[in-house]
Image (cartoon, rainbow over all chains, first blue to last red):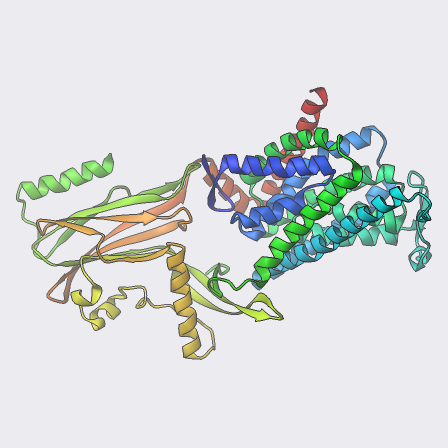
Length: 306
Length: 246
């Protein structure tokens, strides 16, 4: 069943898009991740223009994150104060990111920057995941090994504008979460992701937040930041395809429910190794598009106006 | 159906033996508009008509003009990056040519160039300061890529002539057909001379929900963005409610 996507200006099979949403939703439910970092490259692989894939994915992540954010909110797993500081950073970062995106699109480098960002971040995150879970696996077999400290004190904790975050049991400089928010915001805008895969480790290892509130607080700010990206991409670049986003949303919410049920039966370490390997596979696939000699070194684009 | 009606009217005129003007052509399309809607996967139009007496025909279909950028990828440290680019001003987004036999057998190079018939003869203007040889490379790349996207095509045989008077030809539009105004021209040649031509306009546009969404996204972008967010929020919330009960 072919469906014409009004913004992407192409015709794709609606069932395939539902299936794609379902598959990524299944993985995101199983592993507890947003899935934007898998969906955007997959959309590009099936021929959606990279700029449309990124803009549309931001819109889809809003839908994918909101029910999780609400669930965590009800259970009180959100540090609102921390969430708001991260969100302010996220607004600044994502706004900068969308303007950078518009500029790169104008000079014909956006596809390249999207691909490089994916290779870089998927590569780093994938390797860290695999290494970390292999290490944890060894630790679990050798309980005598020394445990890690909860967090380390570095120069980062000496920054000014200290703020008390009661829920996180932290007294740290507001610049730290603000900076993380800005950085993740830029990534969200350029890569079409929520940025949870960077935000969550940063909250645990850089800020030292308790893991129980990390996911809720991350989802809370992702909803606002991806909403901001959706809005600015719509205004600046007209690259948000509502029809495409809705097909993916329907597929992914169903897939996510199945994924959560399957994921709860798997062991944590196995799940993390599997996710790490999937991330690395997507990374390798994107990297391949950068190094393989194209069929034609020339490509077409449309100029602005007349 | 209206196309069929028009075809019949042409036939009636011919059968009635009504005298066509000397060296004239009548032509029409099965439809004057291509509507892009939800199920759009491309379209095939039928061009048909009649000529007075024998001759050679060339049909050109020229799409809306717009600025087209041709970019060349360069390999830097093993990675392919977009490098130099050339912008062709007001280049036709779609160009198709159909002829009853090879172009150069119909008319001289001089005549074809004057009429800009053939993708290697259409005028492509650029402000680029690159050397002429380099611009030519970009121009060839432009036409090659357009042909790969099926937006430019040259088809020598796809014109059927019945008894030297009636003719018909297909005009295929791929799914990525650019929207805008098109002009279908039927040129008639006799003994290498261009004797007449008949122009038929054609519109390609989006219709229905697709058109509304596209126009809304481009003309009221802030509202479009706000509604996209709202729909996503409601959809996400709704999914949470449904599956919490399940």
